[in-house]
Every structure is written in structure tokens, then in C-alpha cells.
Image 1 (cartoon, rainbow, N blue to C red):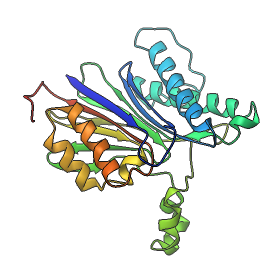
Image 2: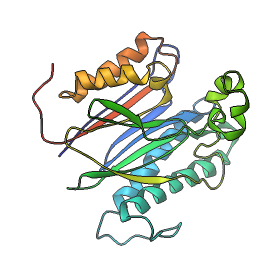
Image 3: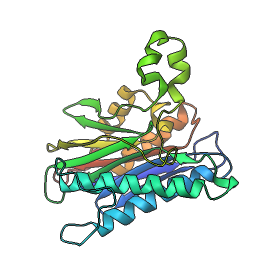
Length: 256
């Protein structure tokens, strides 16, 4: 079975929380909004709503249209997630063009679709919100940030410009009429934990600290989420903080 928990927090420096999360319809989503005024919040909420809407409409056995085509090289779940994110991109791009208040808005996304009664999940991301797999006492980042620091040309000065450009995104939902991204699937083993999070967490906590917290509270995901947020805030809380944890396997005794 799948246990899950999600938290989002404004942090210690921001007035408004422009992150939005989704934990329903078998899909888990973290979106980190980009844009002035309230536009970032609008973008992240628009993405969450669009993804939830298509995932809900496209459950197995339901008739559904595929506005971006159906890729036979991908599983049904992967096609669902791919289409949902592309629809979210289109919705944000259209709204951003509707008026000055929304011009330039966008959002990152990290999303995981959990297969029903199967030990695997499907995932995708755009931007620098991340997905990690915590398994066997180790933490593995499954996604690669869409940032200038990770682009090929930035390697020329990784210690200088690369560090500065770490937070400059090369992709975000809503930035262009179309967005391309990879969709992947991964098997789950009993006890595996998947973390989806915004950069408000990963900029404040090193991967090793995240691993220590999740491992310490593996039997109590709500406490683990709370401790991740508290840890990010204790290290400055410079940005909004969002984290979703899901654990595959039987219910375990409380680790507290």
C-alpha cells in the first residue's frame, strides 16, 4: 500500500506562499510559482488544478481525448502524466497572455503518478522542483534541475557563474506555448520513500540532512514532513517550502 503526506509552508522571508501541492487522484504534485504580485500563486494553482482535472478524467476505462497525441512507446500512466502537465502549461501560458497582472508568470512542477496495486510510479518534472527516491539507507535525486547551472555552456565556469546561475531556470510551465520534458517510471521496493519538493527545501537542507530526517521518521510520514519544513526554516527559511512524502509497503509501527 501507499502511505503519503504533504506540507507547504510560507517560510521565514516571504509574505505569500506561491507554492501549491496536490495529494489526490493517485497523483502527487508540487508546484513553485514564479512571477510578481500574486501571479506566482495563480500559476502554481492553475497547474495543480489542470493536472488534477486531467488525471481525474483519464482513469482507466474512461473515454478521453488526447490533445497532444498518445505515445505508444509510453505506458498509459506516462501518457496521462505527460498530457496533464502539457495541459497545465497551456492553461498558464494562455492566462499569462490575458493581462498585465499575469504577464511573465510561470511555475515549476514535480509530479508522481502512483500505479494502483502495482509496485511502481511514474514521474516528471519541469524547473527546479525535485523528486528523490530514498531506499536502502540512501538518497537518489531522480530529476535534474532545468537551470542554467546545469546547461552545457555553464560548465565553463562552474565555480563562478554556475553557482550564480543555479536559480535561473531554463524551463518553467507557462514560459512558452509548448514545453518538452521526460516522463519516467521506476519500480518500488517495500520501504521505499519518494520525496517531491520545492527548492525552498533543497536550498536550505543538504541531501544528507533530508535523508537523516526521513529515515528517522520513516514510520511517521506526517512527523517527517513537519521536520523537513522545520529544518528548512531553522536554516533560514528563505523561500516557500513544500514537501510530499509517499512510502510504499505495509503499515509500520510508529518510529517516534
